[in-house]
Every structure is written in structure tokens, then in C-alpha cells.
Length: 293
Image (tube, rainbow, N blue to C red; front, side, top):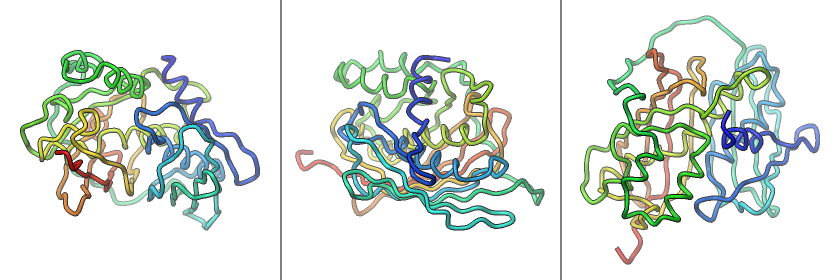
């Protein structure tokens, strides 16, 4: 296991301060607020720790309410909304400085058989043939070295491989509003770490890294890394259809059907390498062009 992945798992391991009250911390962020994937993942950890292990997360719906302060702890309060025979529902509010910064509802289900079909996996090259994220960054001399280093550090726990150039790598020319990345953790999850909830939590963490890329691609924008767009996540929803492992290759196929009113919508599907549809994701975010542009 890489040091970066070990540090991420430590970050997601919340302190329990009361029966349904947890405390998390943050790490230095690339931008002056808590990374949205972190707070979503931590909130799901808090919810999952109040649910029997044989009930697996099948959906989450979340709103980002205020920018999180990376210098302050985050308190996660869990509300046990429902414990049914098949489904368990939890609501989590993340609080900093006495104010809610994030809200999440998550549903968990006992194992059950039922109808089964899925959308086909799209074509994508083998991840082994693609450059690593660090290798791609070396090809972008237009990026400030400090910015490039912070991006690389923030994503070091994950082996993330773009199928095509990311927005900040080839901006200036609009192209199809679609982006594909392969990802997996930089290390195996074994022993006590090999739990269903942790694989889902890690996918939640990664899901916020690139989902709005397709919005930027449609307009030839490079994003905050080059300073031509200001953005932030607004809301996020995920549906977990089938079991998967976050330490094995997953294809994140993303597209943007719309952007308007200072907001952009991204929607995506995550497939396992053998073609199973594992997760569906939808996110809306603020996407604003600074006045100087």
C-alpha cells in the first residue's frame, strides 16, 4: 500500500465521540476549502458505522452547503431515519464553526435477489496502455509548477488515468462533452480493510475529482488549474448497483448534457473492467467564468 493511500484511509477513519456523533479532520487542500469528495466520503463512513455490516449502501444524495474549512475539524451528526426489514436510511449533517457545511442522505439494503439487466460498457483502451496522471502532468509546461505539484499530491492515493487529455491539458478548443478515466487505489485493500463499505466510500471520494471535466471540455475551458473557470460542487447523487473493488480498475465514463445559469451538470457510469455496471453518478456544480475573461 502506498503512503498516500495509507494517509487517505487514516483521513477517512473518523473518531467516534458519541453514539451517533463523529469527528473528522481534513488535509491541506489544493484550493482553500475542503475537497468535496472527502466530506462526502467521511459522511458516508459516519452513516455506515450506524448500520449493520450485512446491509450495503445502495444510494446517496448530498448537498454541499458551505465551503469547508480545511483547518478545522468536521463534526458528523447521524440521524437514524429508518430501520426497516429490507432498507435502512440515515441522514448525516456535517458541521463546522456551528454551521452545517454538508448534508447527506444514504440508504442501505439487505442482500436480495431480483431482476437484473444493465447498460453496456462503452469502448475504452486498456488502462495499462495509458500514461499515469504524473506522466501526463510532465507534458503541461503551461501549468504553474506549484499548482501541478498540489494536483499530483491531492491525487496520489489513486492511480487515475485519463483516456484523453484532461481539460487543463488541452484547453482552448471546445470538444465533445465527454471524458473517460480509469481509476483504482494505489495499493490493495486487504484483511480488515477489505470491507464493502470502504470500497464504496473510496469510489465516492474519487467520484468528485473529475465529474465536471466534461462541462469544461464542451467550452474549451481548463478549469481552476489554469484560472479560466471558478467552480464548486453543489449536489451529488450516486447509486451503487453491483459489488466492485476500488483497488481494481474501474472505468469512469462521464458526460455533460447541459450547462446554463452558472451551473453545469455531469452524469456518469462506473464499470468494472469485466464490464459490469457498478455505479451511476450525477452531479451539478457551479461553473463560472471570471470577469477578467
